[in-house]
Image (cartoon, rainbow, N blue to C red; front, side, top):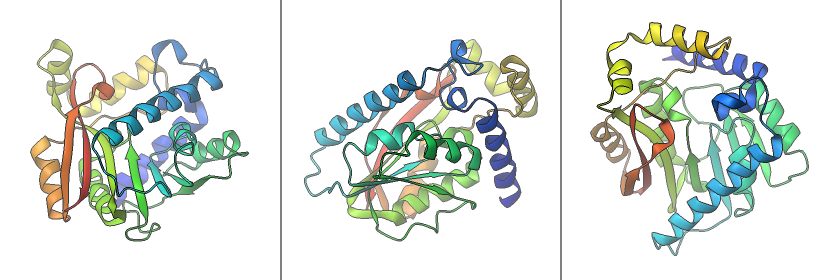
Length: 247
């Protein structure tokens, strides 16, 4: 696990140095540092607004808005947006190059704190200290064993009244693209992605069956309170958004 983690960290440091905004939101027409910074951060504002509306619809009256975590924060796109709703937001990432830019972009936002996590756990964050943990388009790039460990950590860190929200693919679609993702060896897919996107490190994709996520959550004394399809993983993937509380 540690070896996989170090490789993952190296890959995302490379991506953060090359083209950080595109590495976070990989729109084809934005490759080559073509993202406008204001437009990029505006996508975070829209996403978090919808997230908070969805959480409100679940009727969790005891949930506070003191502390939130943006897990896999990158350059702080969602961290910044979460600070509109929470007193303090911790952006957690393994990439020092991404975090350097996150601090630059959010230098005037005192509610945002950015922390480099150099381990396949989140021991740097105390038990039951977060009202919200949010992770989107992050876990899909992390090896499965590490993802399961992070999910267990989410349940440990969230307050009894809080909620964890994360997105992760569960399977391949039964389409031509999904079939290709299923049968082509991962090392070949990584090589193709590097060539197609002309980037120094591959952006890997992984999936975890819904039943395995459920087992990981319940074995960590958590429970899934809401579940819905989430298209964030893109074409070829069946992906879900999970809402989790302590059991």
